[in-house]
Amino acid sequence: MADVAAGGLVLRPGRPEDYTAFARLFLELGVGEPPPPREVWAAELAPLSLFHDGPAGPQAYVVADVLGELGYVVQLAVDASARRQGLGRRMMEAVAASFRARGCQGWALNVKRDNTAALALYASLGMAPRREAVALELSRAQVEALPAAPAGLEVVPVVEAEWEPLTAAFRLMPGKLARFARRGSHLLLRLARAGEPEPLRLGLMDHRSGGVLAPFFAATHGHARALLEEAFRRARAEVLRVVVTDDAPLVERLRSVGAVPELEMLELRGPLLSAASAPPGSAGR
Image (cartoon, rainbow, N blue to C red):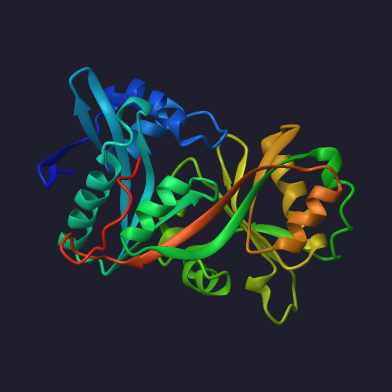
């Protein structure tokens, strides 16, 4: 990735040796997860990262990917000392220019529901909520309190021919499953059952390194149990984080058995506005 410049701001590509700065700034996201390991950073995130350097070193970074005609802002983190100075907005404008140059028509990202400053910034750039998700911490014992899984279900790996049908079935960002499938820290799994009229709608999860299941979809609470039992079997952990999207009944059922909600998020999408056409708004983070 080459340098990106817009509005006088220059962003340089990330390098493997930026891991220490990345790990420090990652904590500014406030998502309750540790930074990805150094090897994941080097293989999967550094090639998609752009950094802004201040006098004392990196002040901010953005991880940005292109999914067909959609630009996807994976992460945007700004050091606390550099906030309220317009840096977040300028970085987003630089990323938007990069996306437009690569043929993107729209862009998307995820943001914490309670991050009012970021929401104001993204709204001023033409982005609006499309979906909502809740991350919950869940134990093995809590999974055992869910309804029994329907008979005949099995958890199978997702194959390439299923990427687009599953994307349509669960209304995912186009190209996102393909992105996950090619990364060593992700494992795409789905539910299957012989004779099911709509087998691709039974359930889907991305089992990520670090004990995170995101996204996570299940047709019923029993289907959710089948996926979760398989996730615990593979992780060999006592606690996992599951990110449930657009399924308030499942969130409430998990809470009723003792799962702890940790984070509420919104998925935002919008057209790529030029700097001249974007309405004025917050100075951002």
